Image (tube, rainbow, N blue to C red; front, top):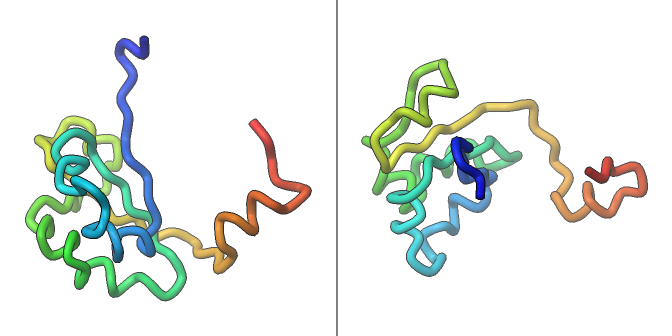
Length: 100
């Protein structure tokens, strides 16, 4: 259905902190590259989380973000971004939220 399309799992650092509680969380690492976006108050917990420690040696450190698609799985990337302290629910519930 999506021939030639490359997918990546996107999550906030706050989710990575609890990721080890997800059902078969290690399977997700083995089937798709993961991008973890920095979230307010969670920058340091990323590397101290159970998932962060378990897969620290699989952290993709190059500045070329696209190269994560060519990396052997498991592979993940931590992206420091401009942080917005609003929850994703509050952003979605905003009447000015862009609907695609």
